[in-house]
Amino acid sequence: MSDTSPIILWFRRDLRLSDHPALHAACKTGRPVIPVFILDDLVEGLGAAPKWRLGLGVEHLSRTLSDKGSCLILRRGAAMDVLQELIGQTGAGAVYWTRAYDPDSMDRDRSVKARLKEDEIEARSFGGHLMFEPWTVETGQGGYYKVYTPFWKNVKDRNVEAPLPTPGQIPAPGSWPESDALGDWQMGKAMRRGAEIVRPYVRLGESAAQSRLGAFMAQRVADYTDDRNRPDIDGTSGLSENLALGEISPQQCWHAGIRAREEGKRGAETFLKELVWREFAYHLMYHTPRILTGNWREDWDAFAWNEDERRAEVQAWKQARTGIRFVDAGLREMYVTGRMHNRARMVVASYLTKHLMSHWKIGLRWFEDCLIDWDPASNAMGWQWSAGSGPDATPYFRVFNPVTQLDKFDPKGAYQRAWIAEGQSTPPDTALSYFDAVPQRWGLSAGDSYPEPVVSASDGRQRALNAYENRGF
Image (tube, rainbow, N blue to C red; front, top):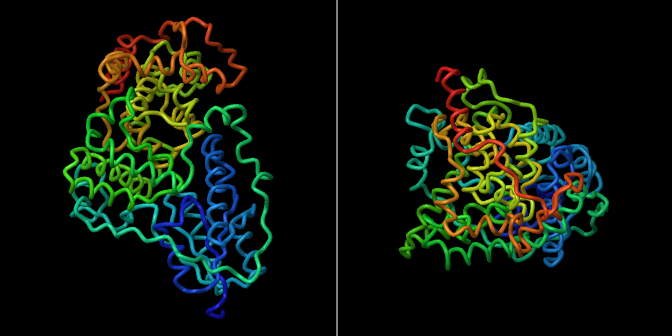
């Protein structure tokens, strides 16, 4: 192949132009760059909210590339088939992409790379979704870390490469191949009426992500250590949505955190630790992919999880009608905004897996369908941590009391008022929006009475402890 042959840049969960190693490398060659997004089976299989949010991100990236004189080519089909077709149409001599770390994506990418090399097409994968590649962080004995604290100690002083700039120019080919129309893909179809409710809460694209990071570092990071636990105030960065789709890189967040720490902002260290917690989840997914589908602690396989999703208790949980205000507020926040405060996530997950004794897989799948910031590694680790079956988990006998948790972290009741309409004479729009976002078949309205607890905090805790005792822990 000639050195002037185009490079296909395969975008996936890396929807940005700045600090994009694959894009930077492609542009540096001076060869024409053809950005491509492929709707393959892995994308088709996403839950309703993540797929819809990804569609918004792809649309925004397409506009951003157009502003740079480039173009995002959209194609639908098996990744290898699409790439081979594009290579034949454009004469491309290389395909570049950012690495993924979940097992299905890794299997696909290995197969694609092998086939491209057979066809004498250059195939290169780059970092960019993580700060530390999973094979570069090892214990003194040579294995992977199974506990977060020593993982943090290993990486906290490592060099994290400075973010790469946005290319000044993206070389274009002489002619562009045909592209699908994004609207024909109907990536938001499964969201139904919920899309209209969630859309105002979306902070879409690279520019919004950078603004979000800047505002957090300027205004909130100093108090982050305490405020991140308070769902009643705006104390977090909100960047999970953008990190999930690569609209901002962890390296960009890390260096902003380092600068804030050097400026003496007290919460910056905690923010850095949270970035490393995300890395830890990805490293565990890479080394032990069973975390996505089964108990990470295999001794939990014999535990009598209830897996019946049709149970009235589970349906009440899904509908945010458990009668436990912290649980219901958290779930309603998710239905209206597409996200849920992290403290609420822990309480919501604990209540399902411990008070209701239901399998964590039920919650994992539900979040996978409902969260716009869904991330495979973080979702799996969070659920297994809460359930007690995962790495670095909270002790199995620690059962969050959702009532005292709400008293502690929502002392004036602002969070519950924001999301629970029943019983309020003039509920806010946030609380009323829940009834517009959820399926009509649930038959819910703000005029309903708020339910009694399906399982009380004390009864649920005792039930969980009895089950653990019988399990023989």
